[in-house]
Length: 195
Image 1 (tube, rainbow, N blue to C red):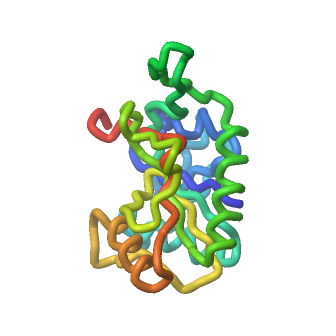
Image 2 (cartoon, rainbow, N blue to C red; image 1 turned 90 degrees about the horizontal axis):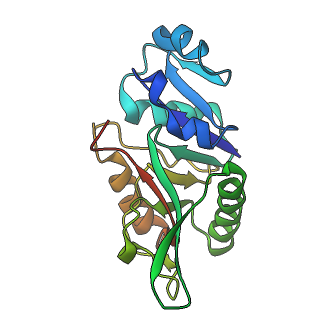
């Protein structure tokens, strides 16, 4: 399993790499030197590959046959909501990346078992975003903030989409395979508005 963390122009802010130390940063080749001053696991993406959509496809092409998890580089918080004895919900932060790596592996097993190629983790951490009684949705949107792809197909992001290409590939996947695995029992939230 490859944990791919595409990043550009913010090596000092990769909070996702701090959590998932086994993740690999994929950066524009002209930024490789500055990222390597901070991180060991850096792979340069050729300058001819422009934008996040093309970068994701380049990663999939380089790692054909390997399960790939795409993670945005700006993790805000990760964990789950738990009820205490009084029925009050409190957020439990997960700080150990190995916990998420095990969850990713399990989600790939579930995906393969039901014939899907994409899973996505809930990418918000509000109290109402987690549903323990219904931990999966099969007709939902998936974002590449935390998305796993079984990379044994020609399924690729549509490069005509400069943004929202993750929503688009999820919809195409639902059309082709009948659904996606939307995860709602655990959350992975990014700092999109801040970064």
